[in-house]
Figure (cartoon, helix red, strand yellow):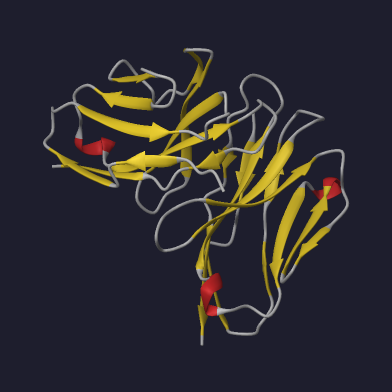
Length: 115
Length: 113
């Protein structure tokens, strides 16, 4: 069975602080894909990043960075120098390569960035 | 940039009524999905659709739900007799290949009174 755990329900930071959102996953598959999506207050789901299980290289995109560690089954997301516009709910999701590859989402972490 | 679109953005209906939620996937995509998000909760998979048939469905997707691709562009979700607990945000997603990233539409907020 696949499962994604985002233990942090809500995080509040002040602008310019760095913040890390945790994601821990469970899967029996050796090949799988991990994702982060952002859901701003307007409600849509915005794709941020996808990682394949065979590629543990960390990734940086502007103020965003992702730390993928298979040894601890974690795929954490860090926002550097947070901004008010980063306020949103962030979902981590897992997909296995079998079947038609539905996404299994975590419960999300609400990030509140205050000025 | 191509995007998934959904209509309506908000639908209000009475319990027991039928609703049809519409989605236009990205034009060259072949795999289509519906997900549901009850207010304040996580996003849950409902159904996947490929080659004009359902490829996988969740326990939520019971006989009250159906999906259809009536033409080359639309992908619809029908709820035959809505219940209060069907109130949620419904997201459509599409992907070109089964291993590709799923791109989501903006969602339809369904309110059942």
